[in-house]
Length: 123
Image (cartoon, rainbow, N blue to C red):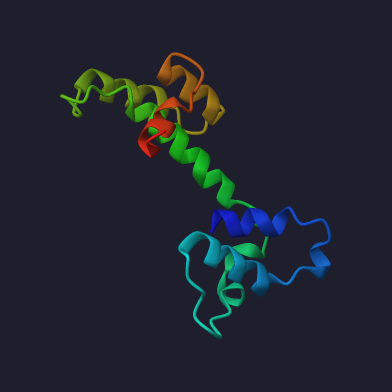
């Protein structure tokens, strides 16, 4: 859905876009198959309207940050109590008192990195 959402929201003349045609092209490109005839996916994809506007991009960043935080846990001890406590105190206990990126930096002890995300993808 990210590719579809971003493709639609980066069109120069959105008023002239054929949403079904773009969906069919992307579907074929990604899966190697044509979408089911008459499925009209765009008509049922409610996230496209109502203020969500290309919001799927944010999901990808949450995965980047999650992988970065997870990379701190030693592979042999995913229940590391010290790190779990640090997560609870640095992230969860702070609630909405600070900007999320600041909480993330405090937990990581550094600026966030995409390295763990790319490693998870096999790059």
